[in-house]
Length: 69
Image (cartoon, rainbow, N blue to C red):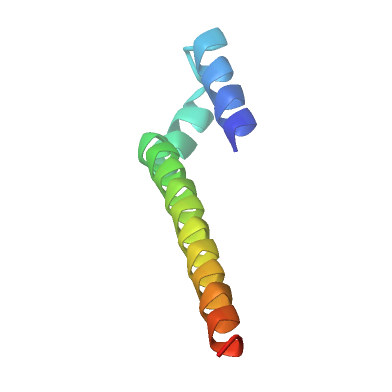
């Protein structure tokens, strides 16, 4: 994802005067919002997967404690 965002940024810097077709597509998809939203979604996915990992580890720990009784 970072590579794609870097590529888009490089294009915007190297070719600041986009063609009308590209300008329309960027407007139609609301490119700036999409970039921000994509970064937020990826961050939420990482946080969610970390939380799931923590829950699994806690369940494993609990299970070991119960077997030792």
